[in-house]
Length: 173
Image (cartoon, rainbow, N blue to C red; front, side):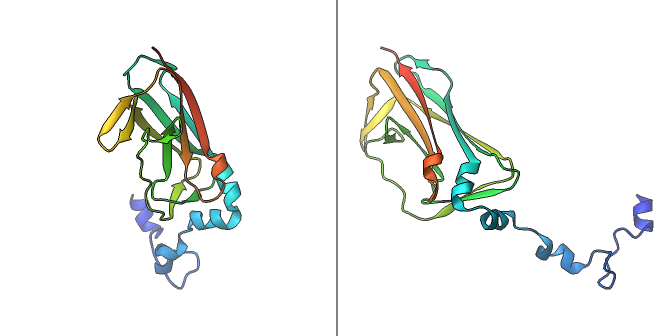
């Protein structure tokens, strides 16, 4: 440690161009990679950079057995990517086209926000569906036996058709 202090490597000097100065340590030297990503890539390319995947823990379920699933979003680029979403809910899931398995689902107010990914970042979210479909505010019914499909989607403003994944599973009789 003594060598570092004696070498003046930590010295700051505004007049010496080869030593750090106060403006170098302020926010002025920080690169905003989200803005760089927006400048270099059009929104359609940013949407293609994100891979969306959904998988259930099993392919067959007994009646009333909770369906556990994992939604994974991965930035395939070595640069940060930021997607503009239509609502504060950055991603949503549906069962057979019903948002969050509800027939009385109320979508959030439209308010744009961002879904940010660091370079090569992978985001995983775990959810559980209890095989119930909401019919009214206080009434749920059991899901019918047979095949069902869970769909995961990022609610991006641009390129949303690339930001979808589906997984099919079976509820046994």
